[in-house]
Amino acid sequence: MRIFDPHIHMSSRTTNDYDAMYRAGVRALVEPSFWVGQPRTSVGTFVDYFDGLIGWEPFRASQYGIAHHCTIGLNPKEANDPRCRDVLEVLPRYLAKDGVVAVGELGYDAMTAEEDDVFAAQLELAAEHELPVLVHTPHRDKEAGTRRSLDVIRESGIAAERVVVDHLNEVTVEAVAESGCWMGFSIYPDTKMDEDRMVRIMRRYGVERMLVNSAADWGKSDPLKTSKTAHAMLAAGFEPAAVDTVFWSNPVGFYGQSGRLRTEAPALGDGDGTTYAGNSIERGKR
Amino acid sequence: MTAPKPAELRAALDERIDEAAGRWLDEALADIATGMRAIGTLFPAAGRKCGRGPLVDDVAAVESETLRSWNSEDAVRALLLTALPLTGAELGTEISALYRYGDAAEKRGVLRGAGVLREEPELVDSVLPLVRDALRSNDTGLIAAGMAEFGAEHLDAPAYRQGVLKCVFLGIPLRDVFGLPERADSELARMLTDYARERSAAGREIPNDVWLVVDPTQLHSAEEA
Ligand SMILES: [Zn+2]
Image (cartoon, rainbow over all chains, first blue to last red):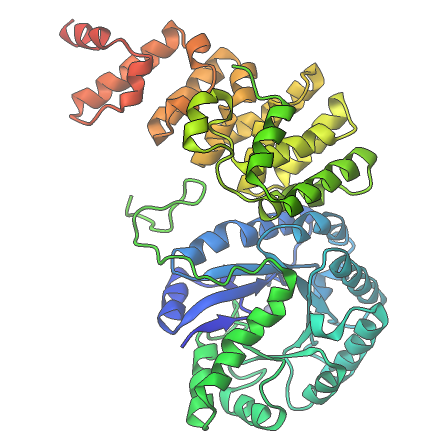
């Protein structure tokens, strides 16, 4: 079974996770830029983080036979901090990089006027750089946030098929299904969605335009949730072809719209001391 | 120690890239020259638009000493730099930003491309710190680019010698280091002789490249003494 995790924050995960993901069938992933837990207070820390997403992290993934891509954006939470606003000015440089396949995560946190501005500005950047867009739905006031996001997307003029709206649930999926945008689901223990609920949603809405991810990060999360959901689909009677559509063809189709996706997984590293900028991940060995 | 001329780079590139890539490059050059589009968003795209392999094949490389260590994307980036309608300190600022925000391939393009630009004192002042940054790294590709045409021409003698020594340590072939025939001095010979002696005393292999600079008879006579 080949798996493409369309949303996972590997910077927060260990190299053991890459190993386990590879063994579970993960061959490609997209790491959206997001909030890192500790609020950032300067543009410089964003830039260093972006550099990691296009440098060290793809190297680490490649050592475990996984193709790594990322999305770049100013997340809504930090869009509210004036010290972070100038990130918008460096975004065009990063949106032009090879490994960047979408703008994101965008959307709302507390639905402020600042968030409106930053969301709209980045939708414009997406059009300019011919990139699809990853929009998340807020934790609080989720339904209203989803509708407002869909309104902003519609008004921006960007084609619905170039947008995924993520972290959906039974309540928010309907509006996104109608909008023509892609539907993203995060199988995240205890909070967002679980495997069995996901299977029920796919029974009802089908597998077209469906993206299922682990959204694993520094929270209590599980980078193997993609694989576990794929197995839950099979157990529930979905054909292997339908599973492949959800966990491979769909993410390839969505992010492939960037024209920058490399889907051939890198050759599995053989611990031969390959380095990134002179640094190996085999600490202590050399 | 002469860097290739932009026309040479373009001619070699035209052998390598297809029509669509050539058109992309022409438009990018025109847009940079007129300020229509920012170089900051074109520079990262060089590899994906025009390919990444060696600029010249092995046979041609033997004949063309100057192009041997260039990749196609390096050549594209060097040409993009030449299109900037800036001079002096302004040009230096733009180039420094490309380096700061660049990935490894872009940084390499900056360091190689700088050697192709018309020489100006303010530009040299801006680019030299970038070369030093590259030489401080442990990235072999970056270090090699630091020791390419621009670095070899402008680094002071101590920094140049340290650069050569670091290349030997990291296994970067000295044939990729520019200016060695002109710049190898007695101090560099001493440093590499000491290094070879240390390796020899530890029973470790001595990299072949050191014999480009080290006199083997010196190594032995010193050991006997
Ligand atoms: Zn996320």
